[in-house]
Image 1 (tube, rainbow, N blue to C red):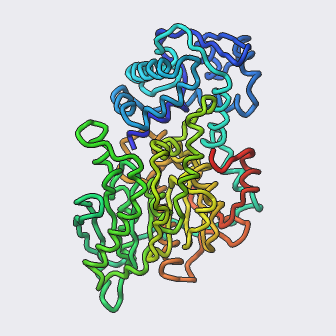
Image 2: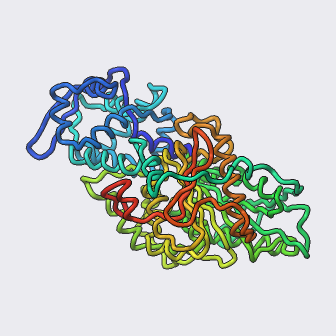
Length: 527
């Protein structure tokens, strides 16, 4: 996920050593005001705005003012090398294009100046902040478009939970939540031994796909093990989720995982370093095909021991997109094209990395929309990227019970647009929405402890234990058909609360658009 870290600069700010730029000029039609950048830094630090800044702030709604101060105090863990590498990627270029909308200069001039300022600011700061970028901008005055700033603050407020109110507001829907199942108990390993086997197979699009499988010792021709497939996210590999697979295998599940050929850590790192080809635009949409091929391989190699007609899937981030498609959600290319139009609107600033990633080449759509694999009987999507590639209509096509997990502090796949809004479209009984307070996009991933806490979130070991418990209970109930297994959520409008501080979890089996609009007014299906 390092290639995504730099996208957080749109949420960051606070003081830094002085450089070229000293003033901000705010323009909205005939209205124009100028303020010192130092005055903005003082405001970020909690001081009352000066006269010049107060004149500008009166144009913003109270919620936008709160979002501004919150954003000004966020920091992104980015150094100059990471900044330079990120800016060379399609995602980096599109992010700079969005930030350039904030500046009243020709797009190419503003974009080049921003790129230079971003790299210079990253080289001189322990944690990149927007104020560092402003002061490194190679002109003494930066003309800011107030309407674009208003658009940015509105999207930050809705998408990134900057006021930290989303979890509590969801908790209040339908009354006080009841106590849910004990996830730590559910996460305890079982007594079944298992063998690990690594292998490669030839796919339809590439010659070699790396994969692995856990085979329980208890599985035989007369007692086949149910299969769970793990689908890792962008710029990770199969190891990131194998801890969940180990828990499931110890309880008698067969578990298979793989490295996706176009989006794995090795592929993305090689592309960023220039030692490998940049993945084809929209190559990610093919990932469900590769999972189907993996299931075929397990059947071919171990079909006498593994029940490949009874499959559960669990995916994180872009792997969450993958399992959603396998569960039956149909790709809605027209919806994607409409959702991507906002990136070309000069007054709309989009800093949602999930949307920018999906919109790298929206004009290169494909005819295929259905990737449903009927062998998949249940799906778990962890911090999935789903919107705008799926619409509410396509989400209604999901044909199996689905657990959708959202982190309230996820800035890479923000919860409102990527999990909560899509969940509303689900119609399949048994589906559950889980929201994790203080959870980030990397909370559940293994081997990320070397990254800053602002990215990984608190108590990663607790988060991983919670995912082990959720997966075990959900697969036991819906893949094994164990009706006596404790449900994760009550039927109807109520909620269960499980887990423990600092990462409590709220579980709901129902969420309507009206309820979500009550929680976060003014939402659109595509932000």
